[in-house]
Image (tube, rainbow, N blue to C red):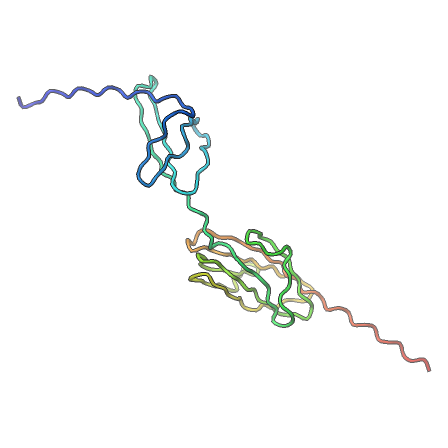
Length: 209
């Protein structure tokens, strides 16, 4: 006949097994791993932690009698934090006088704010940077104006221009380090104070006649 008999309907899917530690793992695909375990979440609830690397989230929707279901697969890849958004070394270089003023606190790549001071004899200073591989640029701002943009192709170092330091005032530098993905960045703040020179010693009294 020109028509074929209808194919028999497949049996309805079996309801999922109970949620619990002994439940079977989520299905996975090449390049992806199971994500959050067999845990039932209410709508709007937070999932488990997203691990670095590929994660698989499955959203299963069931009919009222649980005879039918539909699954949605969401692949989430969490990137490793790029190492290029940090400084590995940072110091102040006075144009004249001894090098280099101490930072307070001492430099750590994950510490954001620093204070330092130079004696009154130092009227200009620059900033020296050491960066790891994966760093794209270091931008230095004084106020809202960018004074220097240092670009890197690999692990390297660079020195900014020299800035004038006003006597008895504090100059704030904002250093923005950007990784090669041009998205990840870290900001360091430096408050640099130029002290007044020490007072001159008093003149000796005139000799007694």
